Amino acid sequence: MNEKLEQLEKRYEQLQTKVSDPNIVSDLTVYRDTMKTLAEIEEVVGKYRELKQVRKGIADSREMLKGELRELAEIELADLEAKIPVLEN
Image (cartoon, rainbow, N blue to C red; front, side):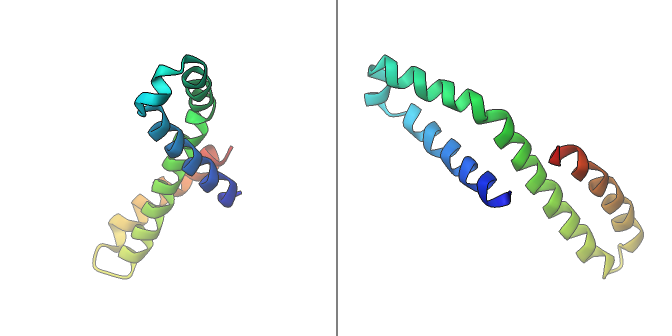
């Protein structure tokens, strides 16, 4: 699943770059199709990016569990882990 989402995110970034190309803007059909594709995948890519941030936050919090900020890390970890099921659906 992550591999497909990574590919989709890469495709999204490529399309964003393509849209800023003056040659594409001058071809309305290609521009419209590109914008349509961007709109179709934008929400999924946004959720995937949010999921990656949450996972990174979990990893960071787990790392803090090893240090002096254990109590704060436990609270943050619980909050972040609660977000995972919502974002994965």
